[in-house]
Length: 357
Picture (cartoon, rainbow, N blue to C red):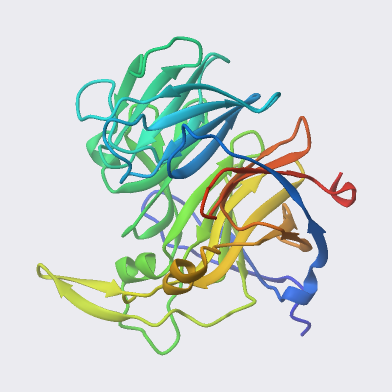
């Protein structure tokens, strides 16, 4: 059977909270994409030392600093995308109320003047005002005990969150706005020739970032250690798994850590996907395919954005002129904003090609 044809199959995914779910499977190759080279204009801001994450709220770009930046520096920055000027810093470093240690994700606030920052280190989200001058947040929400195992999460509906855990039995977990677990979706498939791997091992093997678009009801586990995207439709609780081009599993071993057996991927892991964005029409996935040692030598992390439709069909390969670590998309201006990984990291701005519009 042609590898580019969707292989549809239905099977029961065990979950204590849910009924059976559909799982569609697709294997892709690089030749499935039409290559489009794109070039960027780069903006550098001396106020930003070591950018780690990027977010977008209306026309404001949000940048977080890496955790190792000196404590006296702010954790977040606001950039005006209309004229590419530095707006203001946000995020006082600390462990007290309205402070944060790290900034891992950004979320839109209830109005255009506010945004939220997720501190994975302290398992809380802090709300900030776009307009006031203080570094401190204006409110915060600490994750509940049922959410303590969550690494990445995002708002799914007006009344629920979706997230992923490093060692969960399910691919996706669901919580209400009070932080109570209300669902778990998708059991892990067994690995051929390694039936000894349990659900926690498989979750570690499929380590991912987690991104999504609540308006479209689509959320993605972005495969960090293997060529895999797991697209979850929150409306019908179905999955589309996209594997390839590299179908090999990363080398690993099982080690004992405090009486618990963990999956160990070695000192020089190979990084695959780095980020993904869901828009009204497409899924954009930033692909790297380099090892940690290679990145340390070259500062090149990812120079391709693979574009799929919402069903996982491969469409275009946007070849980038600069290496990025993550990105956002402004659908109002049809632009891609990406954090560069060069010696003086900044923001690369790409115009989305006409073929995609």
